[in-house]
Image 1 (cartoon, rainbow, N blue to C red):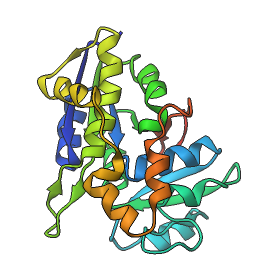
Image 2 (image 1 turned 90 degrees about the vertical axis):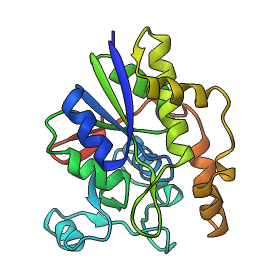
Image 3 (image 1 turned 180 degrees about the vertical axis):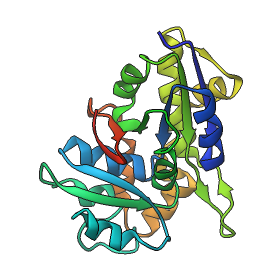
Image 4 (image 1 turned 30 degrees about the vertical axis):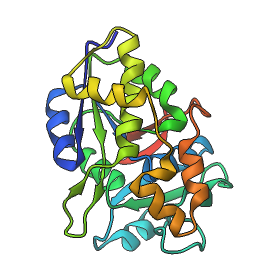
Length: 231
């Protein structure tokens, strides 16, 4: 049984949690964790990569993978969850994002197991991480225009749903963890939050709908040797 669960925001929070816990759970509901979950559910292998850094295209060529693009395009494979629904088993993707993927890439060297979770696989994530004594939940968040962290409702909600599941199993939650779990007791539509509003305005309402679907898969993405695949 898990003894404790804590939650923190962003890359700095991930570093702090990695030093004090036995496993990290990265939650980036709109959209990295949702896209990743859809991909591995279809048998893909996915490499995280920081957004906006040099080397992504070269890295994808070196390991013979497809480099996905952001929500600025609808062509081919992108960060959009809807673009990954028809993946073939065995597909290999490099999936950059400014938040969840960048955090996952950095966490690969933390020495603790790293999984990614979202609303689509929350119960399965609870089952997996409950094997560990100390669980750290990373709410990835978004970015303000100056690059600083913007807390994001959807990631607080996703973290809270997972934490609430652990608390029901007898896990002791930190004050922050219990606050996140309380938020999950009365969820608001993702289309009403800032990130959801932005995606709907760009024409990606389906991505928000896919992200909001709860417990539609039992697959959880686990990172090993720098890549995610189904645990």
